[in-house]
Length: 340
Image (cartoon, rainbow, N blue to C red; front, side, top):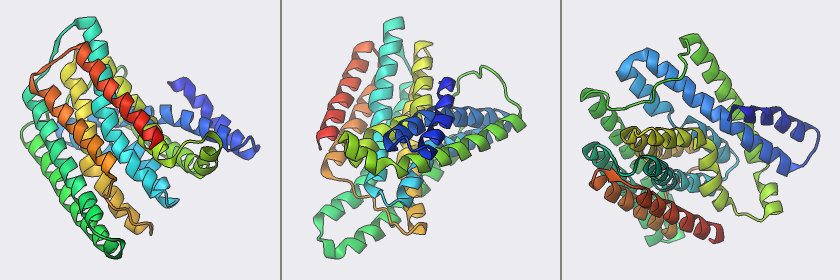
């Protein structure tokens, strides 16, 4: 993916030379993919130098930093529906597309694979509870009229506080019972200075490209005919998490299914319990209050995804057929989101 770094100067040229918003958008999106991967690698390298507890905390905090950066710039531009759609898309992408593809790749190579169902079950249950918490402001918003919309904002903010508290308690529980987070062996060991330098450069680069991407979003949508909702629910989550997705699939190919589920379910939990409430707080500071009010179709899709994750984690086994079924559900939902 590092070859895609060549897209970064092309994005700058497209913007400065007037190649049009479509080329600027395409090159900016392509350049974000390797930067997100480098950000994740730098985080992993730093975590390796910090020990299991602090390293686990760093991973839990920075695991979805790339998507967080993109959505912050979307909030800055007032694209709140894109932000909410990206939350939905990230959760669904991890528990359907990534997990499903991992099952397919691992199952084709190794047949039936096994994983620790207790740990996976804990995460699946916590994810279901997190999605229930996300759904409460939505159901409340659907039950009242526009006059009382301020109450939805207040409920969203209160819910965000509770969700952040649960996330902190989950981290405390995980660390107090020994760091259960497993990571793939690093191909090369970076020094602390190198990791910090890469982290800073990747973050600055992502911020620059995110502003470029979001700034060209509306004219690009007019050209290609897509909706903001579809871009938010499908495209942005892929851009922010593609490197992590490849890692989950790769370790499944190596028959490390516990790690594959750790990445997929753990990332979904981080989005639901950390990124979503954090964006609520950030949106207040930026003058564009974000509510945790999702439409009924998003809620149905999230509920179905959480239910499927729980069913998959129940028996501690995976096959390529289960993976194909998960991917099929994701593709059907993607088509529905496209026409929504």
